[in-house]
Image (cartoon, rainbow, N blue to C red; front, side, top):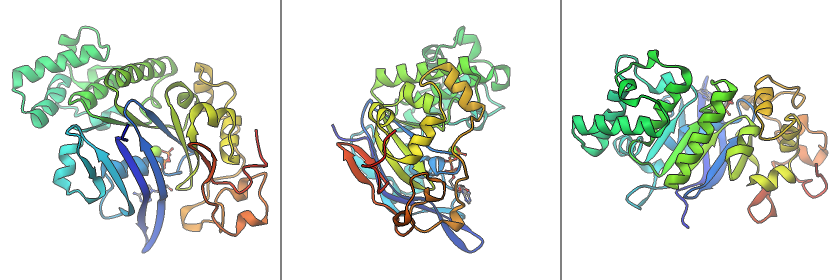
Length: 336
Ligand code: ATP
Ligand code: MG
């Protein structure tokens, strides 16, 4: 099937003190209907900038898309390059064709409106549904995301709810208009482990029912194992490895992916999620500053396999297997 989202050569730059730095540097990725693609990598690797680029939510004065295309297929079946759309066209797509869920629910919720009003507002704006019907639909959506006593809850304000309940509300809001793509940036990171697992289950269930595409940003490989079909590993603004989750976890071919996997003791368990939240002794060294990138492979300074050739040119993404790529010149020699 045709992808819902196809990103090619995306480059997003920030202007910092008269200098341009590339926070995202030549990203290619695709999301198909019913597929979950996880973006992983340490803090600062460019995960959020990638998702903000797709939604065209970069603060215009400091950050902008510099190259590439973001082809997106909306509910009408038409494919558009989001990079070329006007702000007005994007406003229609956001919330309507693309749903968004962020780490902190209060960034998406307005404290002065009831949650019922906020969910129904989206339906009224994008779908032209009348007030009473929209409110009724909002109650239905709250039930759908597993909020008990939904009719009473719809009359509450966000601060009257727990963090987990609030995140359920933002999911209901994101899904209100039946988007074809859901972008979730660390949606469970702020929640405790039990609630986190419940929210992941819910998102997975809703995604399957609607065969939505999902772009899921996380730094947690336990979460990736749990929910994603494909994984895109980012380092310093570039994809270093990508492939089907099962294959990449079984046979990683980039030292950075190997390091991430090693820092995570047991896959897919609540313990693993909790542990990675506790900052395990991870890969030694630090992510380089984008303003002072080393020549060649950005991971070389931290890499146990690095040789001189790694420090001369940025490696190409080599084809390990069908759909599995690694940006390591030694991918054939190394294995976990
Ligand atoms: P985290 O796991 O911490 O959320 P991330 O992978 O989402 O990390 P991004 O937020 O995408 O990282 O940031 C990528 C890089 O872009 C970082 O080096 C960051 O300093 C830079 N960056 C992000 N936003 C801005 C901004 N508004 N101005 C300048 N640089 C920025
Ligand atoms: Mg982020």
